[in-house]
Length: 127
Ligand SMILES: Nc1nc2c(c(=O)[nH]1)N=C([C@H](O)[C@@H](O)CO)CN2
Image (cartoon, rainbow, N blue to C red; front, side, top):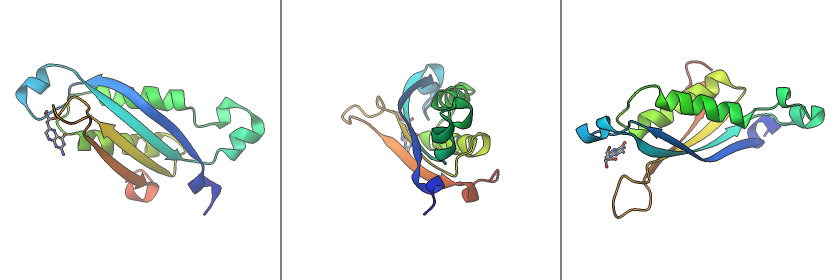
């Protein structure tokens, strides 16, 4: 295992309001999605230089993910998860990404519903 596989930068509980859902009423209003990301990357260069320019900037990733999710209405949280994984692998120096997309308001008697996927550069057409 290389450091590129074992070093993780995380974003937890990123709240994004967007149009999401399979029913007509869901396409007429925003709902809250909560996104968790675990991104495998080499953090040693940033650690040694203590320079944000060498780091995977979680603020920049959060903004890019939020913008992508809010770009257009979608039906399934699966589509959102795959799109986020593709974006992160394409735009950032990330070798593997785990994406969890939660839709906490979706099922009345459930605390949460979610999908979780893991993708690597080899899974992506952009790898
Ligand atoms: N696997 C999925 N199941 C369901 C989804 C989804 O995105 N993925 N979405 C819905 C509805 O939009 C639901 O959230 C409305 O409450 C149902 N099942």
